[in-house]
Image (tube, rainbow, N blue to C red; front, side, top):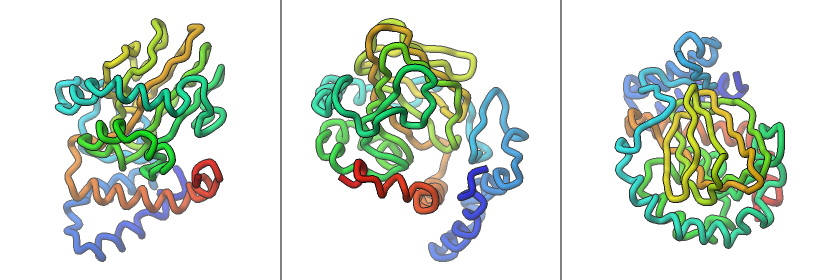
Length: 261
């Protein structure tokens, strides 16, 4: 259990009182914190879903069908504009926001990123440089404010070890930008390859793993979005808890020069 989770119930209860919110409307969020604190997440999940913070009662699927998300067609239609802005940031070969691997999960090769948002906080320099990408993301619930949004770059011969995301309150979308034949992602028991101009949505609280065994780089636009089963008030509560976590555990990240630029 991450330390910030044990401190979160007190923050959440105070926020509920300050906002005048009916506690029953955020009961699933409160229960999710209790489950995490009791270290009982795996007693409530199946099929390889292993988040740190599990919100009960949300539909659980490793892969989601695109017809659940009416915004996908518009996102895919913006691929050329998004790719152009990615290239203007440096693309596959340019200087990346973070040198090395975003989460130190690449046990072979190099995984790096051009960040737009990190834990729902904007990286201003890159956001300003990518207005058409931001415009394409604005209609998507949470894409600019519920987690991570960045251009994800895999160098040739890179393997990202199996891992899980920190909550099932998010889903994750990838839009293929630079997609040689061969690189693939496994989520749960199913694997897919990326295609330029095509998006897919998965639940990253399931175990997932990535390979690029080719001699070419791979790039996607990666972003989190709110789980469609969450209510508006639950989204508000989780957004507040994310702000708490950012203050408690990500302060050092945001103090670094490459983020404050």
